[in-house]
Length: 347
Image 1 (tube, rainbow, N blue to C red):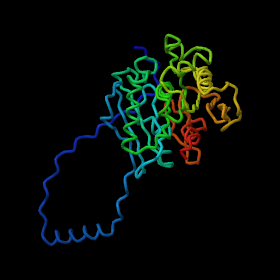
Image 2 (image 1 turned 30 degrees about the vertical axis):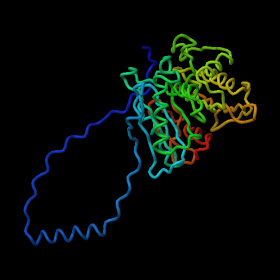
Image 3 (image 1 turned 90 degrees about the vertical axis):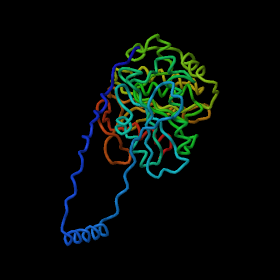
């Protein structure tokens, strides 16, 4: 099967050596034994209470029929009450759930703002470079393949955590960004909003006949054509998820023309034109907002001048900062996760 060019190499896994058998206890004189017992007791009384362990990314099994044969990971902050939002965050090719969840900044924001993070993970058995198969009809259609697996993961989160169904959001990088568009199109009733980072329009590969023309070239179609692909993907008739797109102007892996086509697709779905109602800058980058006929934000874009292919982050401890730099996780003084979360009202 075709597989787009790889993104970052997954983090290496280290094996902990198997512990040896403990040594047999040595006999000690009774007096010394009594003294040792007294000292241990005093130490226990004077020692500070143990610190609670922070939440960690955990794998979840048994979330449904899983026709796409994906793995499910999640991050749930300690003490998260019911009724909180959920963010579905999907990695790029050759990445993994844990590395993307932490590197992008989503897990840190989950602790700060109080929401859960669902982290689907592709496997090499499905795709040699661990890309989500956004370009295969069996995986980008409602009710089948990877799209249905991710939908089942979302339902497991809702059942387990009491998630607010009106505040479920989806985002991802590259192949994960393309899969974000898939989920918004195939299950629009599930998601309030989506954030596509360096991704592609829904069913671009079927329109072009190949994923590579979408990634490296351009597939210009009318807005009606793009919008019809979304409308045909489910029985849903609206309202539609809000879309935010972030894309580097120097991206040669998934060319910036894809942001233009995403705007055409989703402004058409929302029934508005492709003329921005707001044009300003955020962190020095061009920022556009397109309103629907009721005057509500429907589509939003960040054109990241000079950035290549990757997830924008802004490492640091400031209010708007998040993320950790790495391969294809790029410090451009703007953290995509923060701005998406802020737009979605997670804070």
